[in-house]
Length: 152
Image (tube, rainbow, N blue to C red; front, side):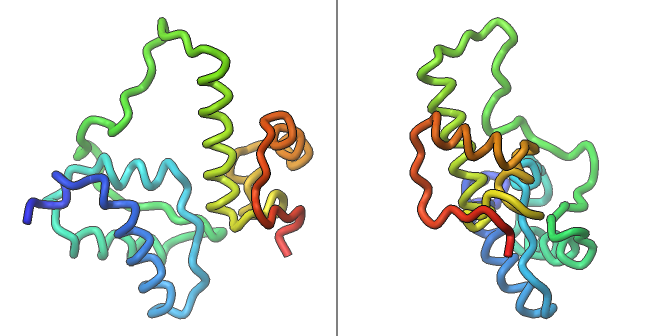
């Protein structure tokens, strides 16, 4: 079987598995994994074994603050990002911009358990006001299931 660094697309699923497993083992609530942290885990060019990833998730759970997971990965050991950054000269048509925005909003809602506001809610993850997010959801024509306003 090829090393994990050659199967980076499997990393988010493995992180989720190890996150649930470790949270249960350590008797803690499962922390949120910001998208950037998942990207960092995928870009990390370590030895490439699953056990190393499991250890990184366990360490991150132990030191996580405020319910958000942050990986403690050595600096300078990354591969090229999975998605290249758009060049400054790239023009994105409005329909593509809206599609990307809608996908980003839905990803935040899913990660937040469809909570819009409150700590760890989708608005918090996106860094926007909950009223702004609610407005964007309507403008984009999204119909997220079970969307809730408070984090309770």
